[in-house]
Structures are given as C-alpha cells and as structure tokens.
Length: 397
Image 1 (cartoon, rainbow, N blue to C red):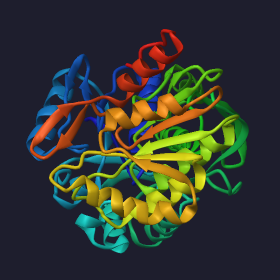
Image 2: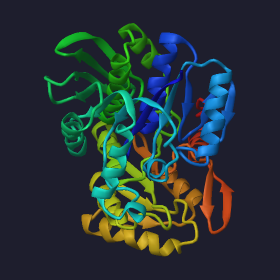
Image 3: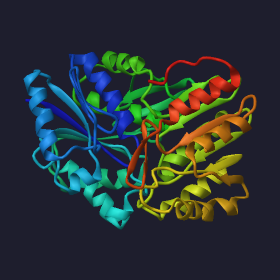
C-alpha cells in the first residue's frame, strides 16, 4: 500500500513537500510528489492544473505509482481540493499542517470556513498528524484533534515551545541558509540546515523533519535529504550577486507570505529593498490593501504591477493595493507592464540593493483576459541583471 503524506496550510506546502520528499528518498528510495510545481512519479512528469488534482488525474497518478512499485507519496492538499472532494478516496497516512492566514476568501468567505475545510484533511489521517503549534490556528487544531478526533498519533512542532514533541532551536541565519538544532521530546538529535534563508523556511524544514520522524525515518536521512535540496523553484530563489544587486523571486501572494519574505530580506539588506508585486484578478480582494501596507512597511521602494489580472481591470487591482501602501509613506510607482516594472527595479538598483519580485514564483505565464502569455519572473530578472552587470549567473531551473 502507498503511504501518503498530505500537507496542507496557506503557505509552505510546496517547500515542505519538496523537503519531505527528499528525506523519504534518502530513507527508502523513490517517492512520488503531487503538488503546485509538478506532479512527478518516477521519471514521469505531469504539468499541474491545480495544486491538488481532480479525482480522475489523482487516480491516474496513484495507478502509475502502483505500477512503478513506489511505496510513498507526498501530496500538497489545497483547501479547494478538500472542499471539492478531490481527495475523498485517498487514504492519507500522515497529515501535516503548516499555518493558516488570509487567502481564498473569495471562495471560503470567512477564515472560520477556511479553517474548518483544512481541518477535514486530518479526519482522513490513518496513522498520525503533525501540527505547527506556533500558528494560532495550528494551536487550535492541535487541541481539537487531541480532544475530538480518533487519530492514533498527534504531534506538535515549534520553534518557541521547548516542550513540543518536536522543537527547533535556531543557531544561525544567513542569506545562504539557516541552521537549527532539532529536538525530539526534549532530546537533541543533531543540527539541520536549510539552503534557503528565512525563519519561515526553518518552519517548513521542521514540518518535513517532524513528519519524517513521526513515520519512523532516521535522523541521518533527514539531515542528508535537507542538505541535498538546493532550492525550491520560485521560493526565495536568489538570482545575481549580493555584492552588486541581488535579485529574489518568490511565490509570496498572501499578506502573511509577503510579510515573512520582506521581513527576512529586510534583516539582511545592506542597501535598499526594492519590491515589485501585484495581486491576482478576481481573487480575495480584501488582501490587496493588506499586502500594500506590508510592502510599504518593509520596502524602501515599491513598484505595483500586474500579477495574473485575468479579466479584471488592472487599474482597479492596483488602486486597491495603493489604499494600503500610500499611508505608509513609502515611495512607489505603478507600472502595469510586469516586464517594465522589473526593468525599472533593476535600473534603480545600486550596489548591495535587494530586488524582490513577488507573487508568481515558479510560474512561467501571465494570465491576462482570456490569454495565457509566456512570462517567467526568474528569467526576466536574471537577463536584466546580467545585462546590467555584464555577468552570467547560474541558471534558475
């Protein structure tokens, strides 16, 4: 039987899933991956339409996993996937919860509804669940699962609570990554390292490591798996040279995700922080001014631009963002053409500045009206930085 690890939460699903997959491969060979960036079974790759596929594609994927005799699968589980019954027939062995913050309220309407949908994943867990105790929704989930649901093994992980089942003590934070000591039930198992900066990436690593330990994976495999994961496409992806102008591309498209991204980079900056971002059309309009305020609070200069406007007038989206950004006093401009926005950021940047392009991450397209136009933030930023500094940087893929 395939052992399925389902990971849910607003942010961190993709990174934690990639981390856990690397760990499980170190422990026992091939492991399938179903998620936002790709669905991969052995050497077969499937281009995702949704983070969590529909029932027909899921059946096809699991049939292929069975044919290839792969024993485990890590799956990102979205709230839409849960609510629409896409995973109703999937036997989930272990569930993981990263965090919950505002997103998808165009669909769920309230945070309570959003939470209750996420909680349903854990009603399907046959072996155990692992929950972030430092998130207020996670703390509530842990208490409710412990009291109400007959799940055999419920664990909590934390960077704050030394009494948690799994506790991480940060020992180093750099642009090149973070190190932390991993504790299980108060006993230090050793040091783990991420190759991506940011406290939120340590939380992702904690979730992956905790779920692995809950499933009986050895610490050596956890350590080796994390060390072998160089990066996750479009997640705090560094482009360029810190001594010139460092570019960063990230998928952050929620208030919480954007704040974690910018707060991390603001802590490392030696020059200015220049932020290029927008918000998607016909999606949770309430988060737009919130993201504007966050961008203005942490950045030295902001450029508001298109981010998959779909059929909504881009000017309306940008105006909503401005409502939150303008009161912060941060200098900014609006450039609807995303290429021109990134180009402006690169032209303004000087030595030691950080340019962060947020919202689309790994995506290689722009949704505008009925068109799906080719566009990759990573390639555009890389090409513009190379041209400015006449250097060749490593490929982002």
